[in-house]
Image 1 (cartoon, rainbow, N blue to C red):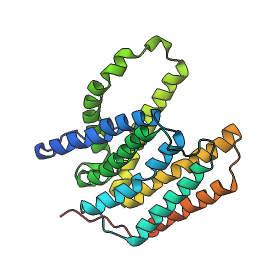
Image 2 (image 1 turned 90 degrees about the horizontal axis):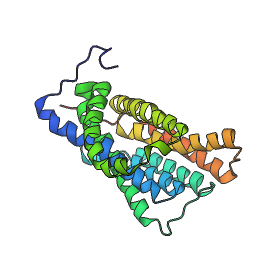
Image 3 (image 1 turned 45 degrees about the horizontal axis):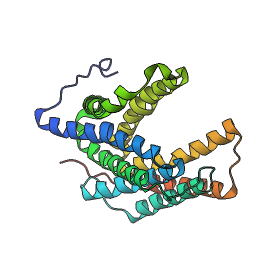
Image 4 (image 1 turned 180 degrees about the vertical axis):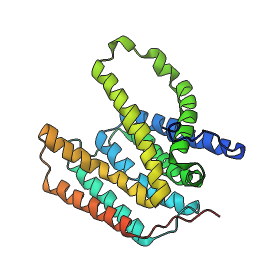
Length: 248
């Protein structure tokens, strides 16, 4: 896509260190923490903890001087977080912190990493654009992720992997990561950190809807109330004026 658009991958020498650091956090360390954390805690815990990432993204963005503080935005983000808590707590997985503190801490660290990379990306998006920055950080992150993953790559019994798992890998690589990261970068560049990050909390709604349509899982009243809270919270944040602080 980058080549089709006639764009090169040239990065200014003084930005290479920042690109490498961003690639490590966003594409290597975050994924490492997320996968290991999710393996050590419940799906409900993971969904709730990752719903904190908009809070971290907003506060980190303010601390870094990338966003202006807004009480209304913070209220909207917290409201959407409360909605996620209701959706997850009354779902089939539920929330339980008994015996899962290691996984919960890993997920918390992943949430902070995602919030940081969302804010940090805005320093470079104006200069390089969403596609070039996404490609550059993915190349950097992949180069770091492979050595980190070697113990699991070596120990993995590759012939035993089912075809459906390979399809899942392809979906994750092409849509969840490649396309998803580009859309995220484009949104950060267009509407800012807070207004982009709050959309992260729509994920449990999509999961709830998929469970209803595909698995016949009927949502309870508390979950529907949670959906309303999330949507109202997202609307509050989106209705605020863009708060990104322009580069000099």
